[in-house]
Image (cartoon, rainbow, N blue to C red; front, side, top):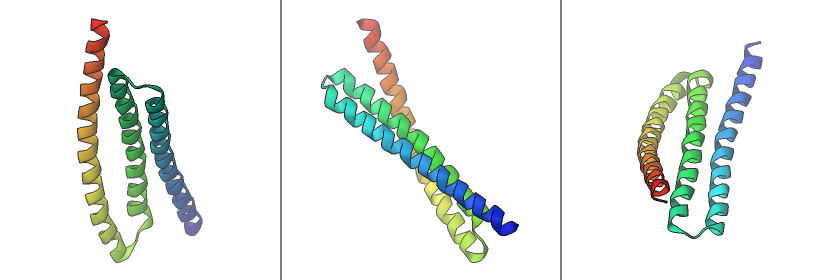
Amino acid sequence: MVEYIHDIIAWLSLLIGLIGILIIVWGALKAFWLFIGHHQHEDFQHIRLELGSHVILGLDFLVGKDIIDTLLLDEGVRFWEDLAGLGTVVAIRIILTHFMLKEIRELEAQSKKGKKKA
């Protein structure tokens, strides 16, 4: 029974990771499509906002997958090694997310100012 639950958790973790990857890939493809179709300066800000939003959401799913893998699937000495690795990855992702959110807020503010002027 325990092995069955372990297998279900492993598959759910894989699914969550794939969702995160698909969100990032979808955002990249969408941003690329918008980039091909628009060549005005204001549009680039919108494209960066679109891509950044997808990357942040995808990273959230990937962090969730890493947490499940480390806390529920690892055992013994490997657990502590993976926990240290998870801490490092989460710290890097937090820093990336912080700066990406900051840039997204700035782009949104610039976009709102541009709409008010028009």
